Length: 265
Image (cartoon, rainbow, N blue to C red; front, side, top):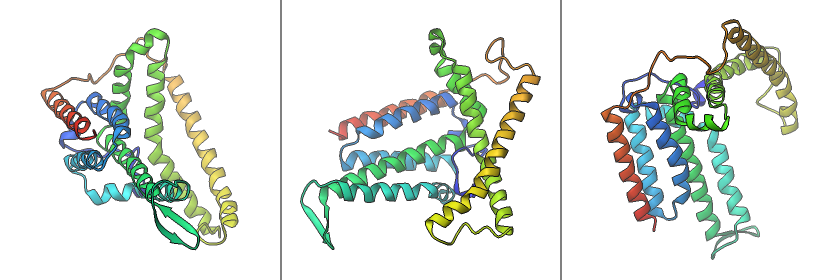
């Protein structure tokens, strides 16, 4: 199960994306999440897709592993596409099947929304694959440090996000172990009607929640025993430093954005 979920997993490496400062990667991700919603034609979507493919190549991670890792979202992407085919009634009719009419606007809308969803999942997954959770925490804390002036607990929020990313693979491993244990006891999670499958999930969810709460309690007790008091008086072992590579990559990304806003119009 863990091999089918890459969000939250970190793969050490020496690629260009691995060596970038996590702050520069976060800036690219945050802006890309916003920019992808400004695409309005085939050229702009193609340009963003080409940029995402370039990022995948720069990670030096097997493309089959990445595509396999986004398998869980294919169902949501397909569901989104079918939903727009049903509810969007714009443009000329393209096909009529048993009284159900598919319109051109529904096809275009479904393709664009599905592609946006896929690009967002793919690019954000590359962030966790090439950046250690602690580096993400430090980068978020530094980037949002000005919010401390208005009493926003930036350090605590960054720590919560880091812990969440850290425990995603752990919970997936725990889920797989529990599902195998329940299957050995005769619980069938793969066959039967939808109602029967939902009832079969209960023996899986109960021990999973108990295990998650137990891990959270143990982590809280460990942090308290070590005198954790938030960001007050804390120092960092690893200091984040901008390098020439970061400036060059951000300049290249700025050029990508300029070309994007030129071709979208």
